[in-house]
Length: 337
Ligand code: ATP
Ligand code: FE
Image (tube, rainbow, N blue to C red; front, side, top):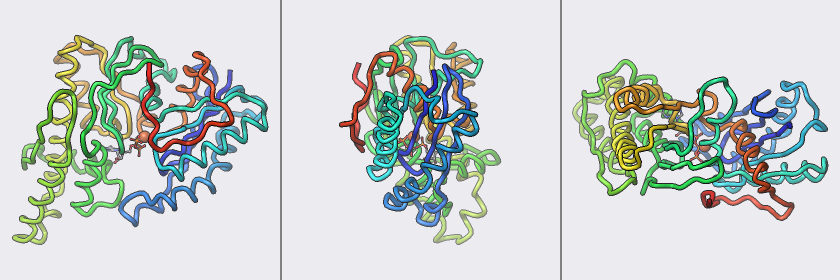
């Protein structure tokens, strides 16, 4: 059974071929154009998706050594994301479904980030129920996953997402967008206890990051006024301290949800799960707390179509097909059990 996955929710155009549980190809065209603007420009993203989608799908087919007629199912990201970006993938999937006379499934982007764990890589997968902390550019959620299609959001951010906390503080330090990977890189050589920043307190399983961003901004402004080279001279320590603060905010709630539910299988997903500090800390916490931890393969952390294809497989098994009246939804609500 061959599935073509298509992802176009933000600034990456991606196509993947999944055969049974195995990824044959996963091709992504990233859009460098946004770097100079310090963030994704929706109109430019939409236009770049239009240019990229056909070459990317072609490349995925070629790499998998199959042709369009071998495809049994088309899975695409319906939302959430940028409207102009989502419509490109959605319109493409609908046209292809019509042309090939093959069924399609509409996938929720955050659902797919989680189900990326079930791509067959020959490693153990989480058992149900498990807790997934989904940390990405637009979301920060604690999700209880009861089955591939039954997911309950236990908590989420009340302001910025974890990825935004990385990117916005990186911007304060003068890094290009997206700054998350750069903070990760410099943090490796820095002291995480060099500086201390605000850890906003929120109830329950929710998160808050906007206070951290403000605290970094005020601190930097104050120090740069005294020493214009402050950032350059303290880059590694600043990055390590910012990263440690973000991780502390995340783990406080993760520990709480694990303790309250007694669930031992703990996973992370989404773009920020590519962060080396987060990956190391989860492994460490797992040892300490007796958790079985699940860390996605690096290439399935940030946006990719492989995760859309595997999500498509589970939805098709539940006969949750989409029809030609389906449309992109920038604010698509999370799957309901
Ligand atoms: P969403 O999935 O919520 O719709 P998105 O699709 O834009 O948002 P992803 O591609 O899942 O987001 O993740 C991108 C985010 O991950 C960016 O904020 C980026 O800075 C962050 N990120 C990627 N790699 C790292 C890293 N190594 N360390 C920290 N953050 C990282
Ligand atoms: Fe994403």
